[in-house]
Length: 217
Length: 217
Image (cartoon, rainbow over all chains, first blue to last red; front, top):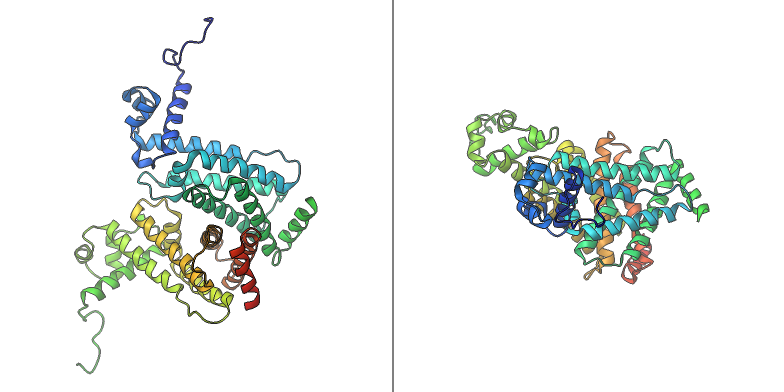
């Protein structure tokens, strides 16, 4: 209605906008500090709002804020897996890994603290959020591979690889993001093929899949 | 001194023996129930002693008992890695995996709860105990491989494989211990070789190692 947009300080945010502003502030703090080292005061300061306002949105305090931030990060992480079902399979996997590694790069410490556990604010609910992302990753991969009824050996292989990717991301953050993300991505894709090939020796379903992957290149 | 050993009920245990008896009782309970579902009462009952006695040994209560049990399990787990430095390398790895899988088989739920986190009694201290075992596993593997100064790519590969083995154990417990332990062990050893081969494509140190492994069979 006004000819110029009001400056952020004066603009009245909707409840959803405010909530999302506070979560963004919290996530950026979690990116550099472990969750237990971030107070509601810090979030209020980072968002440029009063402490009572933060409490109004997250009356459960730190734990509620952390869980909400975690859910928001988990949603963002799931978006990394959104990849059209077209083109060579390993290229799709590479693109999803690029997005995933960009997420890890951006969220740094918060990502580590979350996955490594041992945070004082970790609970079975936060663990369930993280496990939900892992399951979503496995389902995305199986859907791209076109496997409707994955047998136990194929499922186990995919889940092991996902865990190995997580471990790689944590080590990568520890080692000052070496090797470069592009090399890490290619390495992880090659490991994906290699572990499927091992499983293929004892599982006809995986064997058929490996043949498809080879023909698909 | 007496011609017959006294029955356990009458024998006075030393402090160390008593402590170890209580830890064994606790570990056997953790094998079937998540840590937060095991009370000091349960431990007293399982060990056939009074509740005050359990408290005398673990005045810090549940958390202290859990940590002590965890340390004791971690020590047992480290023993799985004790393997003479002789004979074919992959055979040594197979034997260590056999002992590890026997441990997983025996400790079941307690092992899962421990590794999966999300337990209400999990703290940064318990996480450090588990990480210590992971580090010990990596050091054992590197020492058997005869690598004194492992580069980042080789270290990352070994750590990723260890995480994948952990994931496999948890899935294995979830899936009623299928495939059989022998098959799982061989599968994990083959994956070890396969991921090293992938790393060898971009790392001369790992390449030399893979050549050694092939010559060693």
